[in-house]
Amino acid sequence: MRHHSILLALLIVTASCKKKPVTPEKIKPNVLFILVDDLGLHDLSSTGSSYYETPNVDRIAKEGVVFTQGYAGSRVCSPSRATIMTGKFTARHKVTDWIGAKSGEAWREHNRYDQMLPANYTHELPKEDISLAEAMKAGGYKTFFAGKWHLGGEGSYPEDHGFDINVGGWDKGSPIGGYFSPWVNPSLKNEKDGENLSMRLAKETASFIEKNKDTTFFAMLSFYAVHGPIQTTQSKWNKYQSKAVEAGISDSGYIMERKLPIRQVQDNPVYAGLVEQMDDAVGVVLKTLDSLGLDKNTIVVFTSDNGGVASGDSFSTANLPLRGGKGYQWEGGIREPYFIKAPTLTKTPKTIDYPVTGADLYPTILDLTELEVIPNQHVDGVSLKPLLEEIVLSERPLYWHYPHYGNQGGDPSSIIRLGQWKLIHYWEDGHEELYNLEKDPEEQNDVSEQNKSTKENLSNNLLTWLKTVNANMALKDLEYDPALNRKRHESIINELWPQLEKKRLDVLSEDFEPNEDWWSSNTTLD
Image 1 (cartoon, rainbow, N blue to C red):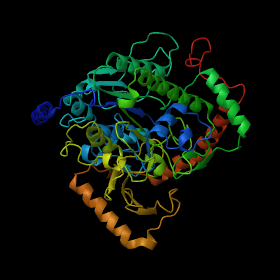
Image 2 (cartoon, rainbow, N blue to C red; image 1 turned 180 degrees about the vertical axis):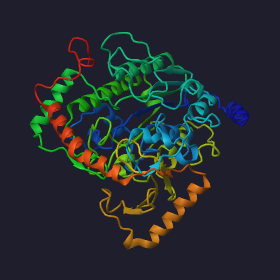
Image 3 (cartoon, one colour; image 1 turned 60 degrees about the horizontal axis):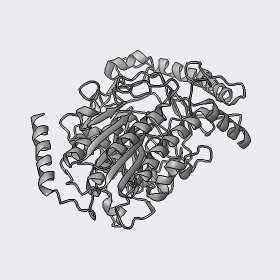
Image 4 (cartoon, one colour; image 1 turned 45 degrees about the vertical axis):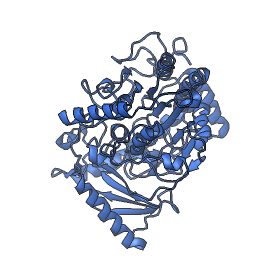
């Protein structure tokens, strides 16, 4: 802690010493960082969905730069969020699973009968790190956070990591009590029954912006949406149920992945409504920037923390043509919408194909706001400002480490991507898969045998790096019983899969009625 305090103090002093006189011609840009929970790459109109409607988020893509090879820091939420806040890959900062997940021998309590015991992991954002918010605050920015935090309990809330104001951020990773007031959140008061959570967070963000329009601000709007339990209003369900019927409802919506059924179609009207509610909320904040004349001097970042939920949780969406989804080691689990609107730059490209991750956002934001970068902090991220200015960056390896199972069907594994190549190392048996993402972005063809030298080089690179950062590892479960594992797998195929197919059609039926605790046309508001 003392080392961290000294570094932060030096950062503040350096920033104040190097601060340039503010003139009407040279005003530091504001930053609006929008982070959506569990949003898949293809969950937006602008990224290929013909079912979901997201005009406000699409506007960010249209007016900004689309990184076509954008990645989250992890396949699940807390690790990815820690990567954004620290500029470090998960194996380095040690928050490798969603905070609250069982590990070690406690994993047996789930009665999944898996081969391995998931690794222990850090349960809060490390205090020794200088967070992105702390760096922005040291640079003279007023800092604000609204929404999902999920990076530790009391003592590790947003206000403990550099945010001046925290609205709605605490230790929970889902919207306790649901998306309509009354919810349960000690950091967000209930004001009106039926109020929509996403809209409330947007209004709080807009209010902060208006109150601080004459200062320089860093506002982070971190939606709980579109995490399960998924909920929407009756009017939005009506809209998307009709849209699905008009498009034609297929008899089957799932196939069996290795461990769980996985959704193949985007036709869930509840999820579609939840996505639109999030988009409506984004529109409120963008309109606030416009009305205050701040849109020309506000950097807008938009991304998600992991892939869309196609297996497990609420089985909400499909990520096709990408394979997998949240919790999976394939592209559907880690590829994200990744947009940066930087109006302070005179000219930017419309799309960039260079592979980028959540770790890059820390140094990029510092660089775009002309604050000093902190190479010893954001060690795994690089500033993307050169790319925005059409300057080529050299190729570099990207790493992911997830020594856990999660509840979506993924496997304990680690990943390296270098250029067009992606190698996955599986910890259960040590086998590896190699994909050429340039030719096979759907990851249908393991080309390990045809590219043995490439596979060996990438494997050595990955395993050496994991050793260098002292990565936490899963352990073999000495009580593993393959017969019990097979029995559970058969139950998933014979019982869960048919249940999911039935539930999908039930949600699309005209007489669908959700739980009374979240949908009443008399109390829920658009």
